Amino acid sequence: MKKVYTIGRYFRKKFGEDVYKVPLSIQGFTCPNIDGTVAKGGCTFCLNESFSPNLDKASKKFHLNPRSVENPLLQNQLMQVKMQYGATSRQLAGKYGVRKFLAYFQSFTNTYAPIETLKALYEEALAQPGCIGLSIGTRSDSVTEEILDYLAELSRKYEIWIEYGIQSVYDETLESINRGHDSANVKEWIEKSKARDLNVCGHVIFGLPQETDEMMLDTVRESIGWGIDSIKIHPLYVVKNTALAIDYIKGRFEPIEEDRYIRLLVESIKMLPPTISVQRVTAGIEDDSLLAPKWCQSKHTQMRHIRTALKEAGYLY
Image (cartoon, rainbow, N blue to C red):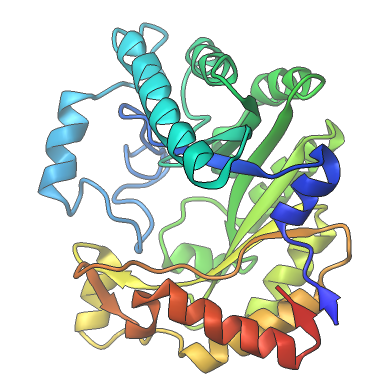
């Protein structure tokens, strides 16, 4: 049996112990696909202020123009980093005995701000107890040479990961989900990141509108060729108050079936070279905001089915 090279195994091999991510959601960040810079409304599957009155209120309360050098809310954001990191890291340490953490800037586009703001937030996170590095979720159209140079400088001392939403390598798919950029843009910035020896994780979605099995597997193949170090794969699921939900309700979108998803996931893992770690193999949401597919409601059940399928293929997860 082969062991899937998970990110946990990567960390244990490199640091000799477990390293956990501490997710951070910093209010005031947004996305160029939401604020109208490249598009409006966000990706069709994204829950944002175009559809959510509560999020709209929060965004007005904490609004920050990401291209403004003046940032009156920076102190508030720095406090968010400290409070969120502190609460979650203490919980993880108490439950699992973990001593090392990565601050994971997860929600929205976490390089879409002035470099001074980013430096302040990243360095505040790195100053927290047990923090050995950063994992930064972003879009390929929201990074700059200056940001990559800064992250490369940090990487001399810390474990630095940049996570790009690839989603699909097919431009017709990216257009259909209102992504706001093409696959060439993703390839360009992944390659620029790798040229600076940064660790890159690519996010891939299976079940995007009109995609065939071969198209989904092509996305994995191309991502490997672009030089990613790690991968996250998950199914496209439909939540309320999104553009995708409208398509689903009107019968214009049919979610991927679980058997098909797992089969493609197993094929993808077989393709991965031994140097590429796996950070995620599924996703879902366990509340009534999920419209479809219903099999995404229980991650525990999903993981049991995935582990069974991988074991049948000769892999241990």
